Amino acid sequence: MNNHSILRVVSKFMIPFILLFALYVQFHGDFGPGGGFQAGVIFAAAFILYGLIYGIENARKVLPATATRLLLAAGVLLYVGTGLFGIFMGGNFLDYNVLAATAVGGQHLGILLVEFGVGTTVAATMVTIFFVFAGQDF
Amino acid sequence: MAIAAFGIIKLRNLFAVVMLSGIFSLLAASLYVHLTAVDVAFTEASVGAGISTLLMLATLAITGEYEKKHTTSDLFPLLIVVVTGAALIYGTLDMPLYGAADAPANLHLIPRFIEQSGTEIGIPNIVTSVLASYRGYDTLGETVVIFTAAIGVLVLLGRGRNRWRPGISADAPSKDEENEV
Image (tube, rainbow over all chains, first blue to last red):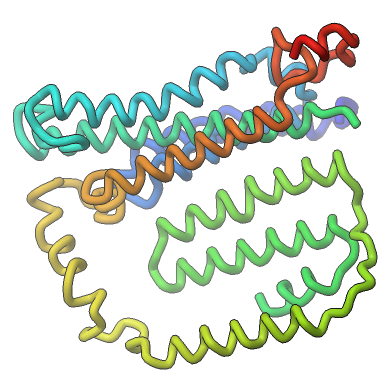
């Protein structure tokens, strides 16, 4: 799809807004519909769009294979880490009340971190699956 | 939705089938909006209609566009589907009406979440507080499932090309490299 100049220009114009919308869905999930799962998928869609229009090779230059693999694990580790940090602070696993000075503040922080972990893993997963599928030459 | 479902069964052109399943997901998403389950609708629209359609298309690009004609009899599968469907419909007869105030789901936990989550969690979206805090273990499990899916795809497809840059479609590996991997 390298020769479609309309697609190239429009996608280049759209990608920043897609990424911005994904971040909005991620961090506004406490107040409106949305959260880590949806944000991760939208975030990945931006990279997949880039990969479709400009080719997988160029997309891999933006987001190398090692980066997606690291992010894949980092999301789960952030989630589990938040849970374990609750244990170190004297609570139960995934007990956010003890993360901050007040219980409600701790819940805010815990949910934010956990949702961010979910979003990271989902985005990395979707990008990985698509790039690996599309990178096959048969 | 029913038309889309029958089209998916009948059509042999897989490209059209993928498009129809995307349409099916989008219609399901609007149904969820109608049931005021916006979080579920959002997920259905982005995952069902968006990403899975894309992944199906990527799969079609490396397989074929047409489904093989199958020659075996359809009667036995049809019988199983009809019996299972009848059992499921029979099961729904006992369920409370949609939105009934005395339904078990509306009596036990939901009032507790609606009344207490404002003071306990303090965020306006109750779905998020249930998902991330009250049911944190479930969400952790879901995240691990997604992580496992990616690992599975990587194990099946992501290697054997170039061991230093996995996932990139490099030149076909030489015989020695293939043995190493």
